[in-house]
Image (cartoon, rainbow, N blue to C red):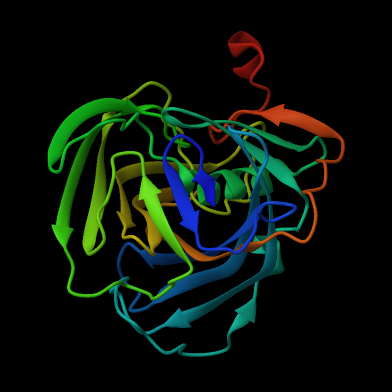
Length: 314
């Protein structure tokens, strides 16, 4: 049985005795790690970790109906200035419920380039909507990849949640000694084809000086862009990567952001890493529920309705 995992990009062939009545359900493991490092005079950093599960079902050819489950977020101080270092908390670990995403149903609409739009509850908080955009944005390739070869480099305007940016795509395929994880019940099939024993890697290097509407956002920002804020932020680096084998899909983004307050002189550097990994494909127990009080929303962070571009900017 063949099913669509990510519309226009990734399918899976399932080994099942008979078709599933309600179709497949996909579980993605979500990890968000943020490190805040003050400019100078401080010999430690603050870490924020979020783990969650993203549960999705295909709904037609272009839609995924999704919700989050088991979100857990915490923060702690560490005696290290290296954001890539695995560390032990220097003090108490504090739960951060404000970063734990609720379990309301929403829908993701795709086009050939990636994310097209969202359908969400009209009462969703803008801050939480932006957090959802950042996470589900990892399911977006950002460009049409039909028929690409084994190794290719090209430039395109990426359909990116933080703005459409001029992006260099680097795609290469190579042999792997063993699969990253063993899941013999299905085989993943990206649009450009992938033989068993091979790994495909897509790197996305964004030119942040060439964006149509670059948004100064960092994950979980409590400030709304629809209100005045004294926080200034600038994203200086944003790279994406997708890794696919016949049994594994991993997608992530790394961002480097500097922030400061107008009323203060301290500059903080934020290192963000967002990672989504396909964990299971199994039979859904029922049809996906409808989105309550549904309202369409743009995939771009800090935006809302997508029906009219002039209204969107208001």
